[in-house]
Length: 240
Image (cartoon, rainbow, N blue to C red; front, side, top):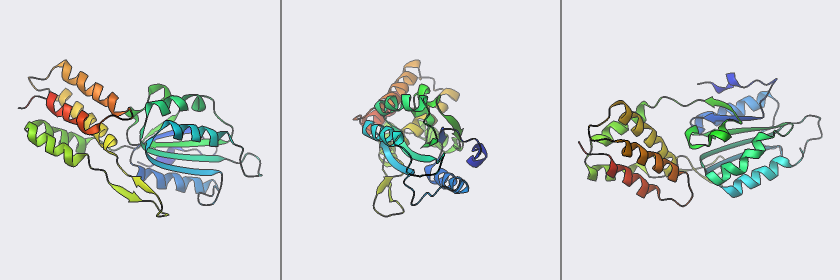
């Protein structure tokens, strides 16, 4: 999906929320900003942040940076912030609510997340939302295989699923987790829930879906064990 068609250089929204793969979306945003004459390499008015989990301290720092005046002497100079994270912790989301509710003149934000379902509805409502996420065919196929497995095989499957992959950024001085265990777990739960709704097992019950909902909520909280939470999901789904 080409996200640029949603970006109007003559009427730039103050905050965009873009759902999809970071490695595909960021180059498009940077290319678009260049058409606006924005220096994305040496300008003090351009900030790019790439994190695994966006925490309360990150939110406070962002609010502080955003409130500062532009370094440019030009009138109506734009300040640009690109923030990509696999997971925005709840306390950080609450901290950002007011900032996005009251737009700052000539300051524009691009938030990139793998799954907008991980965000508070009240926060999402403050953005121009763009979904560049592909279909869930891969997650659905994995979920179907998972359901058909024995409990032991499910546990082994989760061990492989929840392995983090790291990569150095362009400057070679920062490690960025491309797909955290929490992000992977949330994606997998989406596919799993979809399969269970469409093809419910005879032994499945409302409690199964309630448990998945609770696990999803706990995954968004700091300090929770992704491994233990996902193993609990393996336990509540009846074996065929």
